Image (cartoon, rainbow, N blue to C red):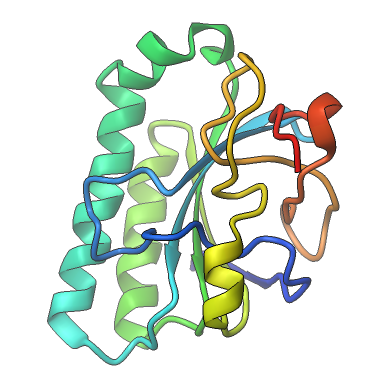
Length: 176
């Protein structure tokens, strides 16, 4: 079973335009210095009621993330982070359907063979204001240390961290 935890802090709204329906877009990328892990986050703010279409979008987005990790694009863009463990997070406003959780569990098992973690984080419902504000997950980079809209910070509800920006000295280099 894939890990499921809640992060209801409201500090990590999805970046504008992020979501499963944008399968070719990396929603958020961060180096979590507390756990020394790279976190690639994808967001889903819609309820899990779109059936096969939504599951297909999840599969395609996950495939794009895995391709980014395994096919060398991450290595090319962030060679200084090459030896770090990697975790993909599905950050969702609603708990995924049983079918989606089944798919994610199977995907987690396969990704574990490549030393890639997979976790589902329920972030609660996101209002339009929160989605457009940005914040560290989806915020702008202000440094050359590899922040592509991610960050790290406040930690441990369950298994892994929730994220928040820590200013220019934080792990992601965001200046919020």
